[in-house]
Length: 438
Image (cartoon, rainbow, N blue to C red; front, side, top):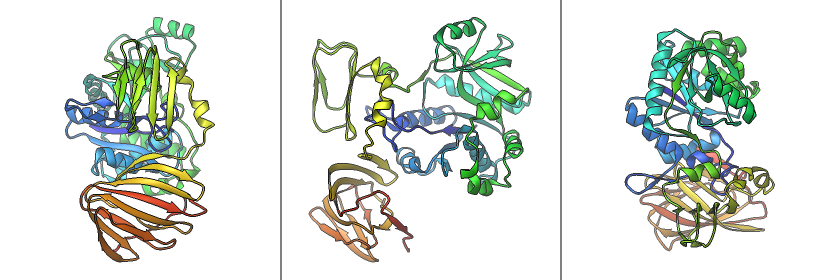
């Protein structure tokens, strides 16, 4: 099975756990069988591998998420990097061209596209395999998954099939309706459009060449910022006469808000939290190293992270986005391919950060023009490289870098460093990367 997972999101609706780098699919909130926690993307990736160990998985995402994807899924997962956001049609075309031109997969091979973050059981991924198999038959150019609706929702588009069979031609698509209109759609046998579909590689590449002037993956990548922002539904699906729908009746949830997320949490509290016996339908997610105590709270979600603290009625929690948009706060925590960082303190002319590097990993070899840095090693061992000069480091060592010097740190073991940035212009944009010579 060839599968493209679409990974987007700006991290607003699940604030303060999500931010512009860590969107909802990367929040580690689901308990694994071994007691550890996993994120939505880790859960989905694990489920795909359980159903099809040989699945060829490509994640279509922005540059800002690449490092985090490698952190959570390892270095072997395929990634199609979008130079900028251009909606789902350009993203799918780019990922499809990557499969064909870079990975050498035949144009007759089927591909399944789905979001990276559905909360589903394993039967969903069994259906994805069937969806790909149906596309391979060539009876239709496009095969969609229709999800049996649990209620008349205003959040989803609807697919109306011609027949009640498990696989049926599509009669029509309907935009997101109001509740009463949704009821009439469901009475006609309509299903939710969950953004899942399958096709042969050549089909999408042909459609892409009709709408975009490009020669290859590399050419498309170079022109990507000039492409029209348009969804796959508008560009392709709604204009395709040879289209089928495959029915899916298993469990499916879109965990886009705190209210829906807490519905599937295994426990009432994640992290250091205590709820007394008078709390009802209350959930706490705490990423801070301080305790949270809840007493007498009903229908409430409490979440705390380096980004901030949320205390909200569950129903109101779906309306936090405009308030978060007004905050304009910098990213205070992020996971990277090499480890993670956590901002501890921000002053006018200084910033203090706790950096954790995984064994065998390093930061980029880089320099800053407008700030000095001091590294205080508090745990682990490694090597610091400053302007080509190597120096071993261990707990208690202090290393100072002046503005302009090139530097990096390489971890032998798990390495923790307190980094103090000093300067009048401290900015994430003040960074120049260099190749590290072997």
